[in-house]
Image (tube, rainbow, N blue to C red):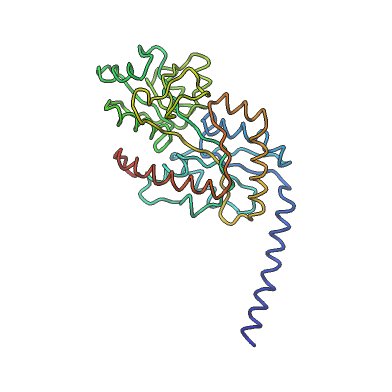
Length: 324
């Protein structure tokens, strides 16, 4: 009798919470939404996020406020998102670098991408572009390798920071080609691509959105990209795999929410993302940034992240990168 009373009491106490969650989902969103970007302004992640949110906000019927929280390869932003209120009013742009690579370079990881967040879904796949300082006397991957092996200095590789996608893809390129190059980490994709445009660094393998503006203006010379095959996104730029068979390195982007966010809210955001990514303005914007639209739901996206964790852990170990 006593046990039955306790059970009835527990059910009674749970009902208001469930009702409140349902009400929150029905009213969502009733105020602006904060979107954490674990990268600085001008980075590839920032650029693509803004292309999406310019249309996603109107679809949801609320303003989306970008909150750039760069630092430690994305760790700062991921930690803030982990600790945020799970009420649907905080989203985070999740990326290969910030969500899976950066934590591999921590001695004691402070977050886990599969355990510490709930998933909205994926919206893009990002390729990297191998670019050089325009005055560097090289116009192909083969010529870049020959230049590197000639021993001419300086020969610096810029990246968006330790643990960034450009860091890992560049280190992978060095490993696969057997060249030597000094790694110069910057605080974000904007400064790193700018350093190559200014001649402070000689090359970088950077996500396409951080490079396309410079390429179009002639400030960077593109040599190749990291997809395994030619792509219509970059019709006049060959894959690195044409020179280094099997070379393949891409990233992904999507949205996470803090753990415990009501599923009805996450589902509402995902439905809005699906609608947004089908809009002509968004499609053309992503194409201009040489980025492929790939829309996946929460479970499929979770699988992508899990596979990415395994792949990048092997890569980090093979490259001999050490934890901070």
